[in-house]
View: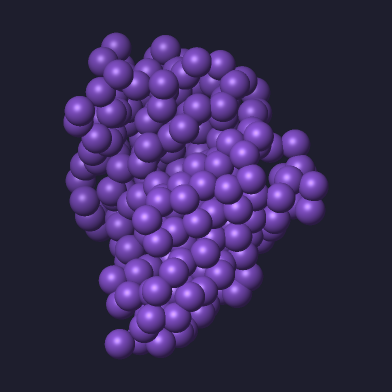
Length: 114
Length: 114
């Protein structure tokens, strides 16, 4: 059974710092791993999707890495800004009964202090 | 290209009532998945619809049911509402091509059960 864990549950840092969010998964046989951003009470915005054959993906100030053998992914945010404050979720897809479902971690609530 | 839309945005119901939530999939997508997200938790998979048939379900009771229409839009119906059904309900659409497929999320419907 695939389980996804995100540590820490909450993180507060001053503006301008570089930071790393962690995601771990128990079954290394994954198709891909996706990082999402969620603002309070809102839907999910996809940030980065890393295919199982890739080791990292970059978008602007965001860089996500994937190490399947250790069951870990990290999301690196450079030069953090108050607008980066949100909850960050990672998810991996599994196939059940012919359907693809995403298994999510519980998220890391990030606060960037001006 | 039109993204995933959901209606209504917010809904308040009382225990025992029934509710219908609606989702319009992104243009070109043929698969819709529904997720329930309780406060402070990651989204949990409810079920997925492909070609108007349910093709996978998570650990949710039968009072959670759905429909998919020929235009690939979808409804989530919940009967005999319970207090614990209070959550953000997220719809995601994707283009089924076998294997894993990237899912795109709507803004969600916030359901409060009193």
